[in-house]
Amino acid sequence: MGLITVIDQSGEYANVVGTLSASQPDAEVRSTQSIAGIVFEAEAPFVVVVAPSATPSIGFDVVRAADAAGAHTSVVIIANEVDTDLMRSAMKAGVADVVSAQDPASDIARAIMDAYTVAAARRIVLAERAEAAATPSGGRVVTVFSTKGGVGKTVLATNLGAALSKSLDLRTAVVDLDLQFGDVGIMLGLAPERTIADVAASIERLDADLLKGHMMHHDSGLDVLLAPVRPEDAETVTTGRIDRILSLLREMYDIVVIDTAASLDEVVLTALDRSDAVYAVTMMDVASIKNMRISVQKLVQLGYANGLVRVVLNRADSKVWLEPHEVERAVGSEIFARIPSDRIVPRSVNKGRPVVLDEPRSDVAKAMVRIAESIADAAGRESSHVT
Image (cartoon, rainbow, N blue to C red; front, side, top):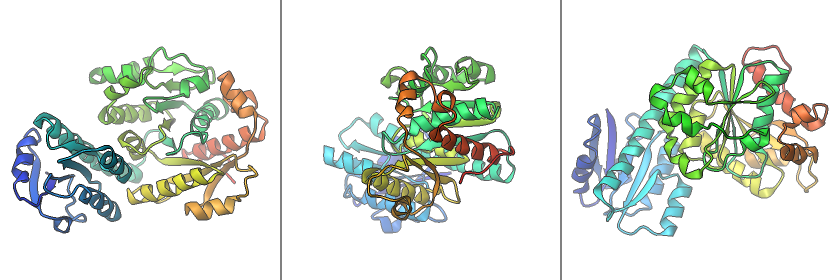
């Protein structure tokens, strides 16, 4: 049974939420007047609903308290007035949704139930991941991640995929989970004839053959599941469908490399939940380092610790009055791998051919191959370790 806790200073809104959540019969609704009445350790709520009678900012406090306790609790704010400042602050804080008290009951119910579904799925995935860690099976899933665009995340993901497939002879798939603006196809010179949106549309009959038929094949031997062509199609690729797709890909391939959007939304968290390793990419500039520090801290709060996250410093030899050890100190994490700067990288991007294939003897290609070798090594192959 999943708990929905309503913070309501009037004491009346819990009945409303109970009615709205009637479609989820295993959900129990409780009411409290403040955050002090919520226990996050033993019986953490799936969802905390901040009722209109409470101050919306209480929702931000709930997110912080849940993160500190390692609880996977979603927060929905129902406010009398919803403006841009509230939406922006809620997004930054990690609130699942903000709806107006004047919205139709169906919209409010959908917001609560969507948050409940995500929280429930999260708990299942984390339990499965803990069980899988004890009895490993299937392929290895790695995610390339950054909350800042332009740091070379997609370049790294596509080059890792090409290196794992071509150089290390592993059955490898790359999945573009930047669902609105994915560039994996461009990086690999692939036309988006079939995409993940097509797979999502056929989710009820999904099997290995259907999934394989929707993937694009690269001349390196790599199979690629591309992002939707139209940004609006991203809405059809729900987290539940993504989770099912990734589970099947793990069974089909030795390595699955996931490229993500520059954000920390539910799609990215779904990828992280399924990942055996996360390569967090940053560069030698203050904005990138600041974003990475916040991201690493947030990931630790969400339970992605114990060596799961590995920092990759791109353009590590840039002369910008910063040294790698200063980046480590600022981020609060050791640098796992360093990729040098090289003008052949943008040239390879424009050609639609990964640099590990186009210029395999270059220092930048060798650096990315070493990361690929470390992935192969973790998957049980004999290879060298990143230094």
